[in-house]
Each structure stands twice: as C-alpha cells, then as structure tokens.
Amino acid sequence: MFRWDAPSDVQRWQRELDRIAPRTERGPSWLKLVWLAGDQFTPDHRVQRWGIYQMVPAWRAPFHIMHELRGPNPRWFLHWDRVSRRFIREREFLINREQWELYRETGCWGKLYWIVQGPPGGHRRRWDDRESRLSQVAGGPEQPPAPGDAEFQPMSFAVLERLREHELIRRFTLRGMFIDKAADMLDQEELHREREFRQKLWDMQTDQVMETLQFTHAEREHIRDSWRRIGKNTKEKPTAADVADLDQVRDEFIHAEG
Image (cartoon, rainbow, N blue to C red):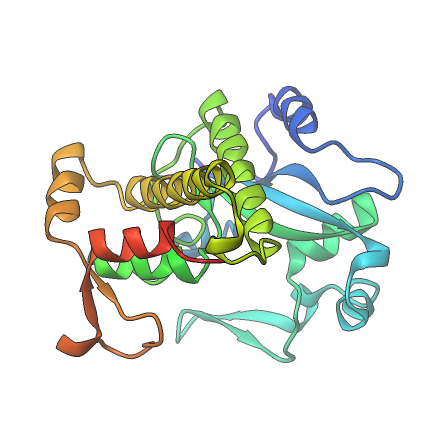
C-alpha cells in the first residue's frame, strides 16, 4: 500500500536520533528521519522506505547548493513520459525535491546518509573507496542498493546501533588522518594502540559491507577464505598482477606506517 505520510512513530525515533547527533545553534551536522515516499503514479518509483538525512547548517553549504535550495522546486522541471516510462528532466539540478522541501522545513541542506532497508539496521547511502572495493571483490556492486531496491525494514534500535557503530568508524578514520609519526618514532604502546584501531576499522567496515550484501555467515567465511582484492591504484577490471590475497592486504593496512 502506497503512503505519502510517514508512519506515526516518526517522533519517537527522531528523539532517539537526537541522542546520537542533536541539533544545536551553530554546531555540526545533525540527523533527521525522513519518510521517502517516492511517486504514487508509477510503481517503478514507489520508494516507501525510511531514510536518515545528515542535515548540514546552511552556513556550511556550498554556494551553488544554497542557490538551488533557495530557488524553484526541482520537481517543477520534471515530468513522467508514459511512452518511455521514465522521468524527463527539462533542467539539471544538484538537489532533489526532498532536499528542497527539507530546506524549507529546517533551513538546512539535507544529504541522504542512511537507508533503512535490506539487512537489519539498514546501510549507508554510499560507500567510500575501501568499502566499494571490498564489495566488488566479493562479487557485489560498486555501491549499496538505492532506496527501494532492497526489502523493507522498519525503523528499529538495530538502526541506531548501526549508526553508533559507523560513528566509531568515522572517528577512527579521522584519527588516522592526523597520525603523522613514522612507526620507528612511536613507542611500543602507541604502536600497539594504532594497530588495534586499524584492525577494528578494517573489520567493522568489512562486516558492514558483507551484511549489506546479505551474505550468510557460511558464505562470508567462504569469501574470507578465497578473497582477492583489487590493487590499490587500479580502478579498471583487475588483472593477475593487480590481485592480492585479502589477508595480506589486511595485514598491510593494519601495519601501515603513519
């Protein structure tokens, strides 16, 4: 059944999201729960999924994005072609209808961050380069499913747990960006802590990708045993020279010098 309006428990879950990333006057991005309805008149575009947007304060949005957010609704320049069964754009936009509406509701630039569908807890809208390559090596797509392309999941505490887990990944990644000491300049305790967080980062990202692809535990173990990875500097289809054993790549990542 198609529904334009969000299920009635949106306020309850928004309060939970506020515990993770609350909105402040001039603070960092905050999280907003949004019902992604899609379009009623075409089954191909009935999304009907929960989405979690990362809401960026207007003063942090790029000028060209703000120009479009303050302009006309992008949907006014879009129509459905019944013959080709696709939307025809009369003008290209960097934003979509949801972002335009969210700006009018909140005064912020909304970026779709998380989709509640597929595995329990859902998945991110887009993967980074490492996650994308992990998926491709496992035989999956370059990016996770689009909204509506995986089975419906209700909003739940599993989503909140996933978001908290990814926040740890984000913090680990940011921390790694600022480590500029070579291994021989770190004492053994610092070096041990550094390798521990790299190992946790790798394993958490790997698990999230595998769960998004919805492999069973047995299938995941089989993949781990036979995994091959695209070479670091290769973006095209890999050749034999570009492929390395996953365990070796994992060890290289964990033991990399700063």
